[in-house]
Image (cartoon, rainbow, N blue to C red):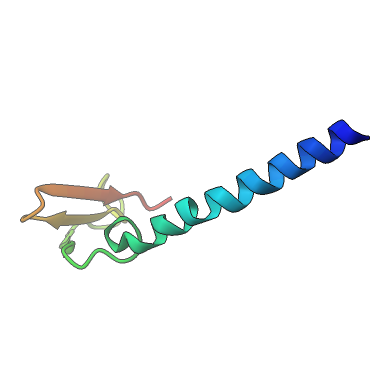
Length: 71
């Protein structure tokens, strides 16, 4: 019984000590949410063409791009 109480106490102390560490991640706004630098690139593919339905986005300043499939 004493070892169970000791383990539970250690677990509660570890959890309460780590809570500020987890909460600190919320302050980093850049890692989550809408990216304002991304611009949609026009796709003129017609139905039946291999690129139809795909969406293209680019951020020239950050030198990155993404492609979203239609599925």
